[in-house]
Length: 348
Image 1 (cartoon, rainbow, N blue to C red):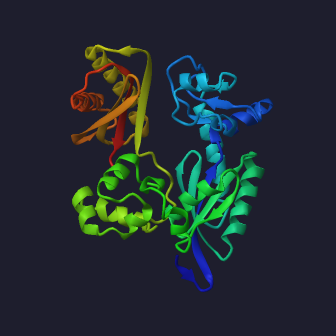
Image 2: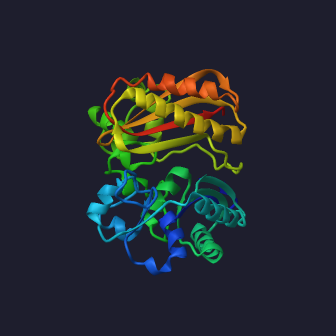
Image 3: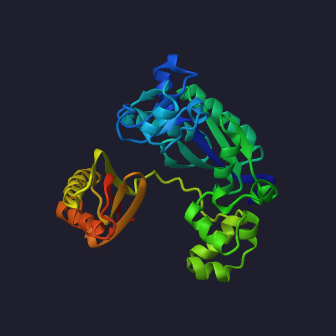
């Protein structure tokens, strides 16, 4: 945390509470207090996953990513609603415009969250002012995490939910995370945590105390030392106020019957690649890489990507098709498929 005279620079992480559900509750106030689940076309008997669940649904074991059929079994009396992307995008834009009313650098990182770089001697007061203004403008609640960097602020939000304000600093870092597993930290996943555990590193404190050399040997010269810095709560990334620009465009389809013939899989990948090509053309940006996602039955997901020999222009459908097929060739498991996805990653 840098000081400007007696005033400190802070990072605030603003996260809208149960965003998709909250937007739906504005349209259907009679559903407040009930377990509400948003996902797919709203039919829980079809193959799709939960996009967002209300807190009432989360208390009964359903959260983002839960298969809709599983959600139905766990909460048969839940209200299931279809996703309405245009509405969510419009509400999100209104929230972000509201955040830009404050004297802050605003970095949008998704529909429902943003980082704010601020200079203030009372970040809690500013956080509560942000909450009030967002509520006045949109009738939505948000949680605000406060920290000396993005990592602290992002993690603080989890302690403040719902609709709270919470601060984490270097002085309290190990109090909050020292005895927790490494994947409790933002940016560290279960696979990395498992690999760290094989090295004898099972807590954040142990990760913070680890030497860079063995970590670099296990994870590479960049990622290894970075993991140790994350363990210590260090984050060098600045809050950037440039307009948010999509890094990729993707489409995916969940099939109501498994695809067992991989000739059918190839045809479906081409269909998705052509739809993605239309999205790319609308963006008018070159593509550097194509990624294919396969979710096998029952629910194992694998992705493979293909970096194009040269960036594909926005109207080069053939290049995207070829890239998708090349990525698909990397899959050695030709088992039954329940979902396919194709993602085009833009040139940075």
